[in-house]
Amino acid sequence: MRIGISVFRWLGYLIIGALLGVLFSMFRSYFVVVAMIVLIILPFISVVSFLFEAKKTGVEILSHITILTEGEETDVLISSKNDGFIPLPGMDAKLEISNVFFGTSADILVSVPLRSGGDKLVLPLVVTDLGSYRLSIKDIKVSDWTGLFHVKFANEIETDPTKTVYIKALPTKSYRQTEDISGLETGAVEAEESVRKGSDTSEVNEIREYMEGDRIRDIHWKISARTDELMVKVRSSMSGTDIVVVLNFFKDADRTRHILRYSYGLLNRMLTLESGLRLLVYDASKTGFDEYVIGDESALMQAYAVILNKPLDVYTGSDVTEEALREYVNRIYPFLESYVRLNVDEKGVSADVIS
Image (cartoon, rainbow, N blue to C red; front, side):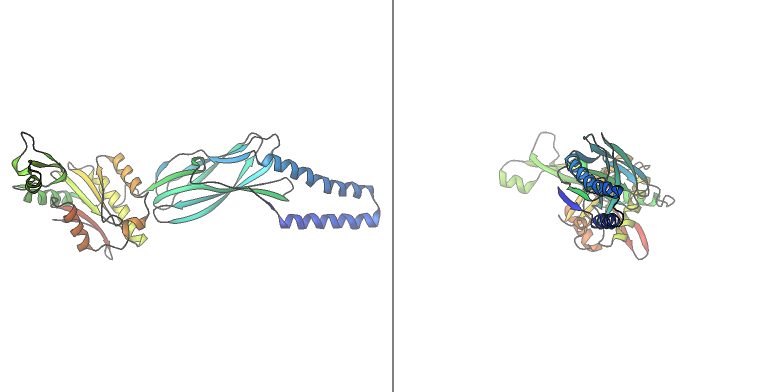
């Protein structure tokens, strides 16, 4: 808690006192004397009661995690607390809204009423950009009725959940809805089927001991030779009728916005296809991929909410080249024979089948 003063209010207060002194010296009026006494006593009473009551005030954000689409409006409910008997003129709350994904932030100043018992304020908020937003109360300032003094409280944002609300702003699913995607499904599935015969296009999840009924071709001969026990590879399908979509982000924020909007609209349309969907997002911090199974629209929304909850720098590091990305896919998913690659270049956004 920090106590401060309003310099301009004090200057005005001193000027009024000086004027009353001049009037008294000129007219010797009892009215002027009374005014001077009030001028001295009133601020003293106001400040003493204010310092006692200010400790009983506070503010909270009552809203919870919200998932929106960019451009959509939401209401944030802010509640003030005043457990004292004396109402105060109001509270100035400084809110910080930060976009975790793009690393931007801005301050919002709001005035919250402080009637005895507290009050509520509905703050309309329009989210104009993609990202995962954190709306936090940085500090609050409460003034006395004269405005001569104020008390500022700094909030522990990281440790107090009542001072923070999270808002996920996802792309709109209507982006590029007129584009024909039948060729992507046909190309991806045909590429898989062309290599499926005589090969296994699944991913190795773990190694375990051989059990009766296991396929001979699943035996891991090298590990079996080292352990003197037959060991087999346990696989999970990464292809078959699944369409795998691979995307990576860029240091350029506008290119990343394009790929986010395009991929979200594309995957939303692909949900109407008979094939299953998997999304692989390149993460430069681990030189690997975050994998998401997209079974329905709810899973798609949750996947992008998780994606946007990490800073863009984590995904990029340095912009990965097309050749490097293909090498990473082949190394990490050696049994994946084809996938849909999303990219943004000077010609715009594109989706191509890589096999």
